[in-house]
Amino acid sequence: MNPLDFIILMSLVITIIIEFFAYWLAFRHHILKLFTYSVLINGLTVPVVFILNNFIGFYFSEILIFVAEGFLIFYLLKTSYKKAFIVSFIANLATAFIGVVVNFFPF
Image (cartoon, rainbow, N blue to C red):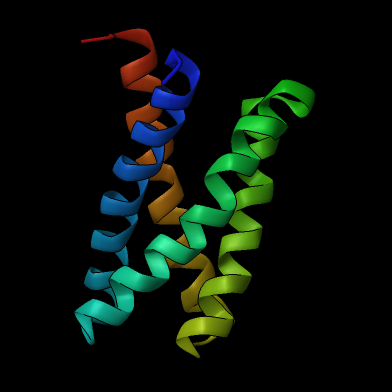
């Protein structure tokens, strides 16, 4: 496995875990369903972030992913737009923060 594939895979795993926790805190039901949605949503969006970062930069790609995930949360969890976008914002803020910390302070 080349280093870039490893970085993408680790980013995906860490993002799934962090965002699952955010979903669980917000919705507190059906743990397996929330985990499945976290895998599905982030399996779609994390690779897109890596591609978009090269073209439009980190901040714009995060904004687009926040919006996309907000709609996915709204659709999959059948919640209000407001709650879906708040959860998406908090989850993406947490994962973006962790990503920045790991980027600047590699372990």
